[in-house]
Image (cartoon, rainbow, N blue to C red):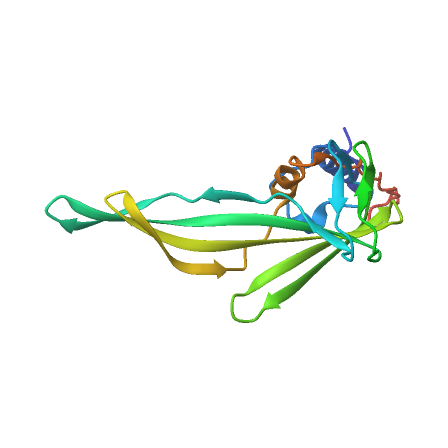
Length: 199
C-alpha cells in the first residue's frame, strides 16, 4: 500500500475528532465551548435591587498529613478547597425575580479570567451567556484554606482564602448539579482539505 501524507492526515484527523467527542471533566473551564447548556432543576430567586445571586458552594478536603510531635501526639494538616459561582443578570430591578425550573441557560463560549485580589491571588473565571437575554454571565472562583488539628480535635484555620484555584469543567458541572444539569455541546467538525502531493 502506498503511503501518502493525505492518508496520514486523514487518519490523525479521524482520531482527533473521535477523541473530541468525549469531553473530559478534567479539562480547563475555558474549554467548555459555545452551546453548553445548564437546564435548571429548581427555580432561582434573585432578590430585589440586586442583579446577581450566589449559587450553592462546594468544599472538599485534600489529603491529610500527620506530623508527629512525640509521646504519641501529633498534628494533622490539610487543605480545604472551596468552589463557588455567582449568576449575573443583565440589570437589577426593584422587583424580586425568579428563573423558573426548566429554564435552559446557554453559554456563548466566551471565557475570561480576572484576579480579584492581588493579595490572595483568587481568580474569577467568567462564562458569558447567550440566552435567555435576561442572564448575563456566570462568575466562578476557587480558593484554598489551610487547616490543622491536634490529635484529630481542636481544628483551627491556619491560612486562607488563597488562590489561584482554577475550576475545571468537572468542577463547574459539580457546582451546577446543585441547581440543574450541565450538557456540553457537540464538537463542530473541522473541514480538512489536503493536496494529494503532500506538503
